[in-house]
Length: 183
Picture 1 (cartoon, one colour):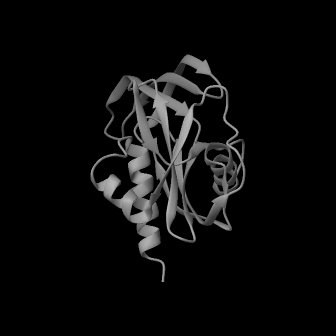
Picture 2: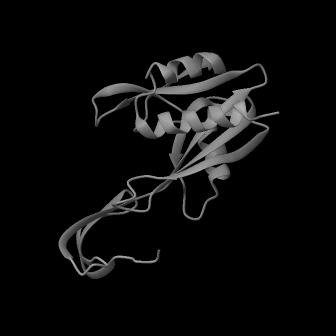
Picture 3: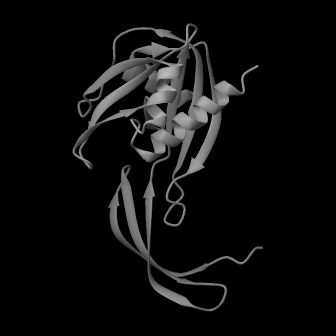
């Protein structure tokens, strides 16, 4: 089925690159209905890294999130830079946030976020052979504690809802599934 919506007009409401842009569009649906105020949002795509050491331990990050006014348990993650491959971003973010490197990096999933409103994507990278490689190199806006769990502890934490942020919960599920499929 190739019946697409057609943009008739667009008005920028907020433009704060590289963080967020918001605009309102007037669109015509295939059935002729016109929506005068369809809101769209543009944010950068990003990567989440499930890194596993040879002995089955996973570094997670615990950090304060202003939007929910709480500390959350997440995978190391960050935005893709212009044109950057997810594996490259994963290598950088794992080192910056957890002080770790790994022998290999493999994209095991890629998902749209807020598909009705924009084209932002999250890529999930499985990093095998992870090891401590140095100190964290945090940005001035970051305060991150590294928490280590075994794969089974992570699986239990995920099942119990301890990874509350939806995109990180999806990334953990995707990474664990990829580990489970490993011969």
